[in-house]
Length: 163
Ligand code: MG
Image (cartoon, rainbow, N blue to C red; front, side):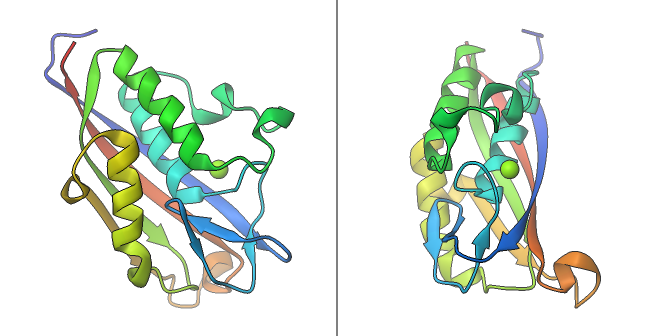
């Protein structure tokens, strides 16, 4: 590991909406007419956070650890995947400083669920919920997300070298 005290990582994910699935975001089930399509529970927020952590640690992306062809990860809770990612990052001598997330979605409303999402991330990443930022914006009706076709998430994570 390098001699720097901090490392930064960024992550991004997008999943399209599909009929007949439950919607999970930040480890919270959100009541909605459609869910996100994907091999796991398709929690785009947790996937973006996982990639930010892995990137900050200089590790490969989430898809290389949990391939969407592996039946073990079919419909799995992404909180379990993030727990494994945390252990990988911790194994590199790193702890989580803070995480900041931007959800880009026309629907549903994210704000009512932010505290529950922060509690989930805090628990899995061994930080206080106030070290987690989650905010949301829309595309003002433009593009695929603006038409309500899916949800995108950006995340950045600051990692501290603790050894
Ligand atoms: Mg994903």
